[in-house]
Image 1 (tube, rainbow, N blue to C red):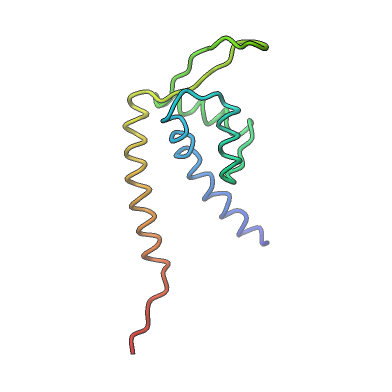
Image 2 (cartoon, rainbow, N blue to C red):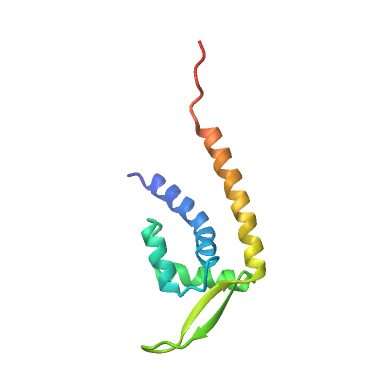
Length: 115
């Protein structure tokens, strides 16, 4: 595969990671390793080195919050959830994603030939 294609694929993935992370967090409080597991199940491979800076950026933007929860084995764990602002932001992302998918599908469909 050409490096141009790999670069384009990486950019496309990067663009949807925040959307996917916020969507995962919309259901419940989540521990970071659970986010990684969900992303891997969906073939959106994310490593801790990618996830933690993203979580920090989303938290600093006021979209996420976290709380420490005691762990039965080891130190307390940080569990993340959406803030009310994060919920509104996610709603907007859902609309934007839907419009974007429709636009891309419309643009990339091969035109039908009428004879």
